[in-house]
Length: 450
Image (tube, rainbow, N blue to C red):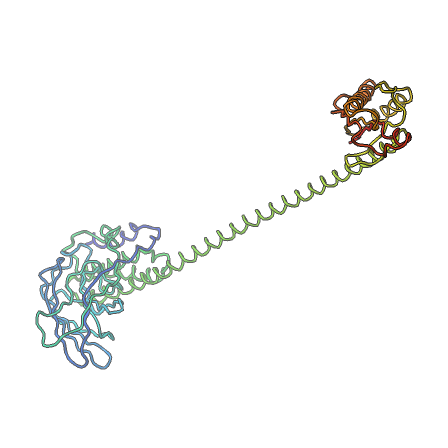
């Protein structure tokens, strides 16, 4: 027996120190009947496969808004034979709204069990339990309400589901922590008190309901000592055992509630931290995007300024170039750029040979172009008056354009600056060919500076 005392204390150290996440509730199903008003109804109680020998009756009367139940059961086996962790039986009322309530603890020996409930439509189940004050039924149903084979009146009936303790809750980490098994020496009330304290410890009542749990542990130590010293004083240790189980169950309930709140708070904090992290990440991304956009805008502005400056510089250079060329030759603005006209008597008659005056003008033009720092292209186009045939004028204008190109290249103008020459003959006059002066204007070579 002293070993039992040591076991009751040691079980608290064996239990897992970390709070287990809540297991999903187990669903059960049973019959419910709707009771007539003001009339006693006697219904059979039948054993289940867990305890097929059990039988009994339930006499129920619904009157004044309450159902009064008289439950009689026979042949209930020792609960330890149903499961090593069981010490007692509990009768439960299952309501049609799937709510379940503890009706009463059922003694192993044959005796009437009395109880009441506000439910009118109800079912009854009897389960094997670790102690009597449990809040939800275990999965071990030993008997339940059934319909009689014959009845003088028809009862409305259906089946409903209800929630119970998860199947493995009393099996995982508790059986070995609650004393020798099987235990045929320790009284059932003492075993029930041990089970209640062990279960409270499993849900970390020592952390979340310390005062209540400490009180239950202290009472359990006293109980172990008392029943060992006076094993025949059943009344004394039974009362203490029930109070120990009651306090342990209170600690269990508080621990479950507070642990759930702690988990919810932890999850809330985790979610808040995650939201803050995501917000910070999003803000950092926005800041980075804004910084990148600002940098891109600044770069675009710098590039625009550079382009504008380059355009201004190019425009200024071009204006100076045009001014310099205009001082040398006749010029006009064309669609493709400045047109410098080598007009007048610049070639030998009916030949492409340049006269000295033309060479002088082209030499000066070459000097200006060679000193120009910007980019440019020269398109050289030859033209004639209307004298002569079209074929002759075409050949002559082409030869004169090529003669101007060759001279400019001799002066140092790169060949890539003069991509093409073109003779137009008399097809593009700039004056009517009606007078000698006008015909001289049409006999020209246009240098288009792009």
